[in-house]
Length: 171
Image (cartoon, rainbow, N blue to C red; front, side, top):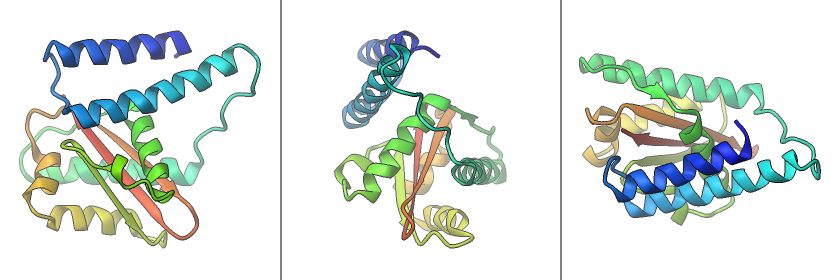
């Protein structure tokens, strides 16, 4: 996707939200827009030839995000619900939010359709975070079970001491 296509997607997201075609709470929409504008800016710089492309997502991060997505779908299946679609744009925003959480920016990691938690990055951290989410009060676990959500973005960041996992849900 080109920077222009990303920018068009962000603008479409904003317009659809304003027209209430999609339901995103204002704080979450602001976070997503901020994250995407940063991504679009970086893509524009890269496309102009001023900077090399961003490095690919490390395989360990991809594997952790896939595991988290699989656990969400399995949990929904237990309750007789359809699996969600993994949304690449939401995942990129979730990855940015996870990285910001590791940097101590806890304000940006919340919202009505966002779940974000940290754990020691030992083996099984993603499964432990998932289990903790499922055990949480309704506002956490019901996000993954809300029938109107059809898409999810999963983002993981690891800083050596901690693993942050963020899930963004949308319709």
